[in-house]
Amino acid sequence: ALGACVVLCCGLSFFTLYSHSTSLPQPNECITIVSGLPRSGTSMLMKMLAAGGLPPLTDGIREADADNPGGYYEFEKVKQLEKDTTWLESARGKAVKVISQLLDQLPLYKSYKIVFVLRKMDEILASQRAMLARRGQPCDRVSDAAMADAFGRHLSAVQQWLAEHPQMEVLYVNYAAALSNPLTTSHEIKDFLALPLDVRQMASVVDESLYRQRGS
Image (spheres, rainbow, N blue to C red):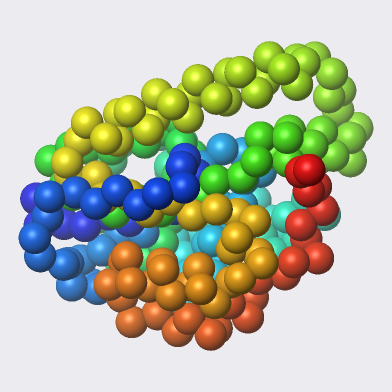
């Protein structure tokens, strides 16, 4: 139904784009979906939302590890979004993480709010290399230049797609800014979602020591 609201935390740009919706959804109508590029900070945003009072939709299958000590907050059914969207109804009033590659599989007969997390490309690539190295997997199969180009083209395409669909409300959150000033970021997210989130609790779970790959 058009009145339904889905919220997504993702990672695209530095400005906020609002749709043409004139009324705010009630908290129990909203679905929060957290998304973005790999290693962009989506798990941190999920943790912030959970601390603020918005429960995550997760199955706990992928457990916390050295790469994500705070947990991944994943839900396996998200991977089948192209074939099955019925599970979205069970996400009302919760937050669920969706990768940016699947955003265009969201049913367009619903309205959405999207919080998309941005991180510097060199930091994303460095974080991926570190993760692969810890797992003993090769990290040089694709050059950084090729990967950065692929990610960049993907983000541009997603931005364009979102801009073309007025049912998509978008808030773009900068990862570094969220780490350096989590309270301000928490207020921005609360205002955008129009939910009674506890911003101080949200800010309290941000761990800047996990900012291990910093760009220049």
